[in-house]
Length: 249
Image (cartoon, rainbow, N blue to C red; front, side, top):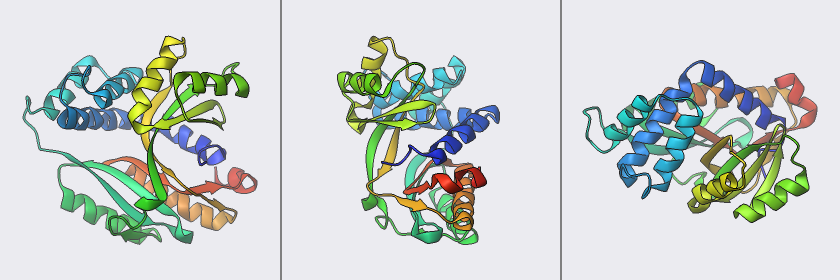
């Protein structure tokens, strides 16, 4: 399963940098808006919105910002209508990529991503071209602390998760996307507060990159796509071999 090697740690470090850049506030606000738009403004009846609110609070997003984002989603505040779209493509070495986007201009976003793929040795693909390689699942991260692998596995099973993986400083629990909020709530009931809980696209198989130059090209494309203003998340089916990870980080 992807996410247990040094590339996972690199992505985590990048996420911390994004927090400092204030980029996460924008992503969380968009997620709140989309969650409210799709499921209503009552978090008791909208599990995705509950998860989004918890994530926003964990990132210290002000309550006023949270309220505005939710009201925008249900049409109580004026603003351009936004929608979520997942675009697909290939990177160097045939790596598959899924790019989750929240935008107020579908055509602009598609054109922009097509250019970004093309300029960075990638190929923008038609819908369905790579989606079959991924499954929609929930990902919940908890700090390792003194939690051993056996203890983390037992905790994951008791909370209703399907699997647990080692991701450096964290244990990562995977669950069906419908059960993400319930599993995170079960962890809190046991006194364990998740660092994050997200819906992700998990690859069914992965490609291990052992060539340094190929690794650099893939990570460059990944970063360019992730840095695009409308991007919420980028998912890929590659792992970086430990023997070249230090050169790339």
